[in-house]
Image (cartoon, rainbow, N blue to C red; front, side, top):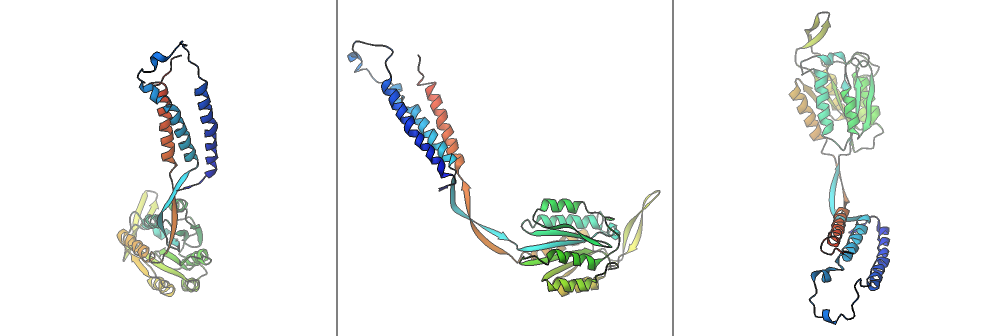
Length: 327
């Protein structure tokens, strides 16, 4: 056992004047009733009070000592834990173009993607995770952080029409790469989710993939949308109406991006498939980790503080019950 604040033990020096004062007080006490001779009381039996008269002071000394020990903060260091760190930096790159409002996933594609991404984030508390959104342009919604509460709040605030409409896959990927290029993590990963084909931006998706490869970044691409057509809501003067629109995902480009960077391409046609994809990525990226052992210090002051308080209460109890003095 070690002590975090050992200087508090100097308070134990106060025990010397406390004990000295008590001894002096006992010797200087004078009887309140004077007798010419006490020989008649020599064979009188001694009461329990006689044997216990010094016990309150002993309890006070013990209580004081225990409280000083508690102030010194005793700690045990004989327990060892193993801490695991993934050593992975991850950027979630999310398409927020208006086509993500299609309702082939429930309640729609963008809300389904946000729900699954939130579960993914909650399952990786030790990782640095960032968030990039893109449509006709792209920007960083949240830089790499381990403060996942902030990250989840920013993810929750995402909605379509935040930025100019369109699908700039290459631009979204390039922005994600820029967030990871200076990372010193063991593994750097981008999970890019989209439901369309690249039709905006100055950076071609394959070019962005080559840049990612140069920085050692692995990209997992996810195409979200059912096969064929999907119901899309159109607001009208009489309410929301639905129209089936064709689902057009450039799977060839998304597959190329994944292959170039050493990742994989997935297709999510419903909510269950999307969850399974993120679960699979989560399992694959947990294989790279480092292990660090450290000594864990555990505070033990509570026991001493409680014991000191109990002895103090015992002293008061004895002083005002069994050993109560009547002037």
